[in-house]
Amino acid sequence: MNREHITALLMRLERYHAKDREERPSHTWRRWVEDPLKPQTNTGSLRINPILVLLAVMALLAGGTFLFFSLVQL
Image 1 (cartoon, one colour):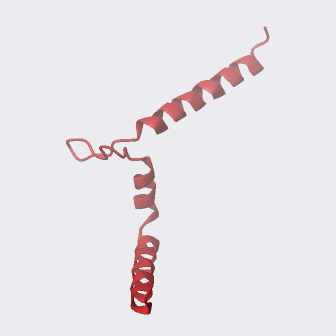
Image 2: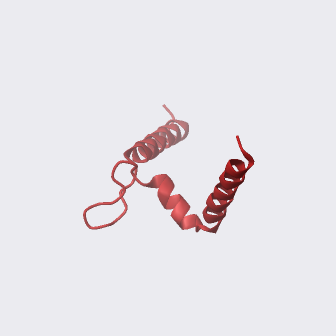
Image 3: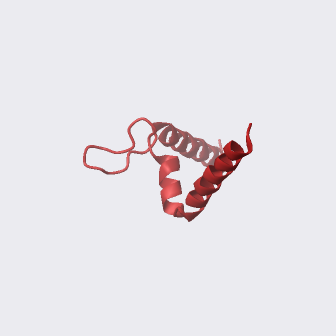
């Protein structure tokens, strides 16, 4: 690779990472939880990733089951 190409590549990487550092944490969080296929509804509100919803429901069920069997004497 020639030196100009490497320099241009480094400049682009620095700009990309500088832009990423300036981003607010709320925007980063929103990108993590939004649906990757269709991030917004027809009205423009956030559509949450269905896999995250499923994992949250499973965690609640597991926690509820654990609490039930640890608190109830059979």
